[in-house]
Image 1 (cartoon, one colour):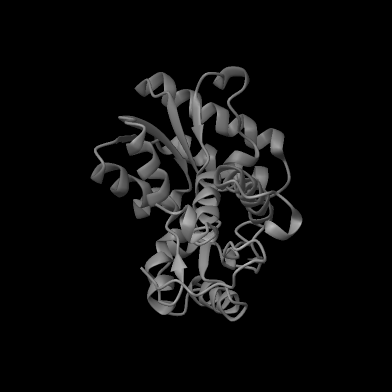
Image 2: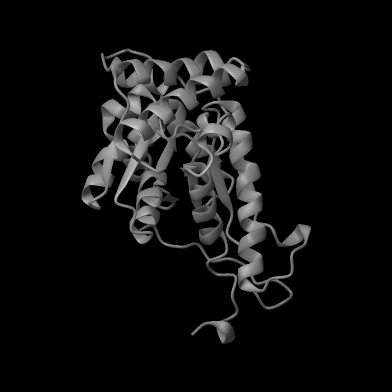
Length: 266
């Protein structure tokens, strides 16, 4: 774990929240939505800590919304010289570090394939691992099996499957046709602005997993999926896990980890 940077005390005697960064641009709508989720998580966190909620109590946070090469395509094509996202991810993380960010969240599930590289190159920062945060939460809730909606790249990299297996949670994934429908919903749907198409594709795959495996919990393992899918209509009663929401909450906890006066600790 990277060391925590000192933070200046506020006039109230509390420590100011840490500066945090968000790696966005994968896609842009998902990055912007992550900021919304983070601000809400900060509001909730302040309430839990008894901190008065006002504009100046929110942490300084920076969104690096830069063009990043397609992550799934990069995982398919690892030839030397192929357009990989590693360099832009490193450059964006470097910009966040230069702006004083001490903790960074990656607003893309598939991009967690490069998490180790980012943490290695920036040991002075904490690069949160969103997949591990999600799986840890499911384990605490004693969930025994989940369906996974994700990109082809995330499936092939085993980003969720390995973490879930380590925690004894069964992971059920769509068949080949279902994966194609998901990619259509992500690329021809959300990324192209056709949310009706995206919702139709995502719902079809979710229902197929529910009917085939009896799962009642689904991980929406791509940041575009929660933008078009909700537990309404035919999915009412299903637990849809939004990794962006989980990661935003984790980022808020890190931001406020020093925000309690010493006399209130222990």
